Image 1 (cartoon, one colour):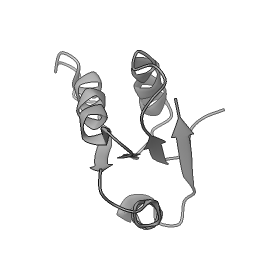
Image 2 (cartoon, rainbow, N blue to C red; image 1 turned 180 degrees about the horizontal axis):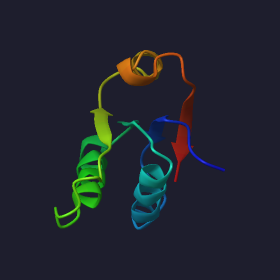
Image 3 (tube, helix red, strand yellow; image 1 turned 45 degrees about the horizontal axis):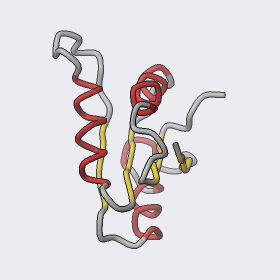
Image 4 (cartoon, rainbow, N blue to C red; image 1 turned 90 degrees about the horizontal axis):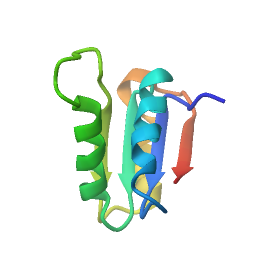
Length: 96
């Protein structure tokens, strides 16, 4: 089943090696936003960004990421719900 266009990824993740497959599925499913929440979310966001960029030769690989280390979950959910490009589309929560 494909991902929604807007995701909230909860961290910590059970195994960071799962991030490669997660990012590839996001790219395949045309996900627009991955908002990362929880302890260490900024580091996980950086890992996701590095996976998306890869070796930098494929300019079609794009995914907007944000991290929210000190924000209440409801604020992050509201940000995702009102995300400019898919306003009104569903937001999916993901745990790896």
